[in-house]
Image 1 (cartoon, rainbow, N blue to C red):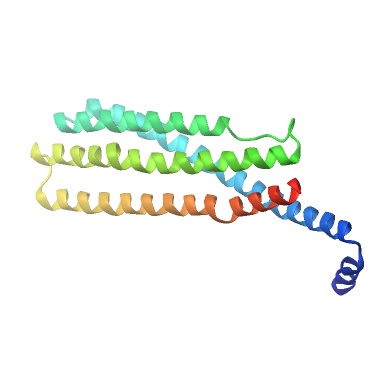
Image 2 (image 1 turned 90 degrees about the vertical axis):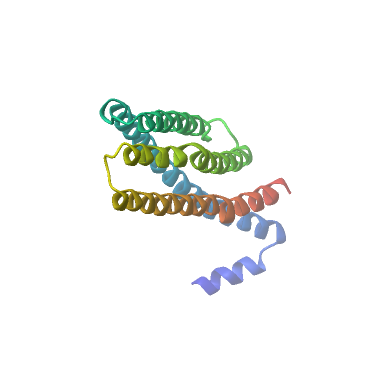
Length: 196
């Protein structure tokens, strides 16, 4: 059956072959875009829930934890979580819909959306390293310097923090590669084919 379809395709005129190739590319890309949008939808929901939990937990931490350094760290972590939550809401609003667009415009909007998501992830990684990571170390330093924990526990918290932050960084880099690599190439290829 497949061999017969290949023979029919090879014997058809060039215009028909181009139409067939376009429709195959469109179907492949649409399936990939659907999976991508589903992944992003659940990732944004997951991160929003995590931000709300972090904000609530550290607001409670401001009142519960006695060291001043830890209170300052809680405040910085809350600021970072609010900023990240706003970034997620902003990127969620930019998701393209195919209701009013032709397919070429839809592809271009998807390409722009992926680039915005990539920038948001990279920006959040750097802001995390600049604000949230030092705030974490400030928080555990406050607990240690007030004599609430001993040196062994302090070192364990530092190691856990470093491992956790390295894992978060690796996951974010994987996400950027997932967005950047194959789908953007497919979208650009299909846009080029459709513009011909």
